[in-house]
Image (tube, rainbow, N blue to C red; front, side, top):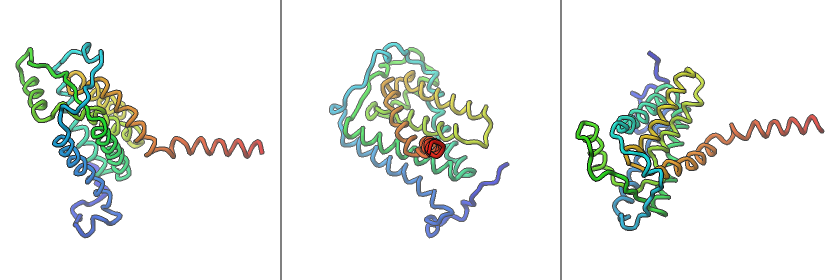
Length: 233
């Protein structure tokens, strides 16, 4: 078993701001998001929301089996953050910062352009543990504040960091990316989101990607241009 890179048993209020543990403060992003989520849910009525819908939503059938993938998102997020927290501090910083950026963008959109979707079935054809789980999700999560989908945003954010991690096998990277993609698709099949919510999350994540990794994208280009100038000069 790998040894954690930090001994978190030593964390105290008076040392959480030190270089050894300051990365833990990024977790406060979740607190900020939950507060803003509660505020938007309370003060933005459903009547003020814009309906999100497209033709693909009518084509994609409700399928309760996709709730397994949808719920696996919680394990994907928590497990990934916990792994990075224990074994890859820089990876944790990237992952949590990516998540915070998507949270900030999404909340701003939810306030400026509140959204709602009405794709949920009125009743379930089958009665089983999966439809009961879907019903539970519906009961605790309103159909408002859906575009862009943070379920999708977080999945892309986490997959992006895993994809760049060099000390894991290629197979594991592929599995994690496929898992994230399957989660993104699942939100449409359990009718938690419109397909448009999925598409809207993509530019949000691309923006976050460029903010976090702009050096990786632009530095090689700048260096190659300088090299060409030196050769031509």
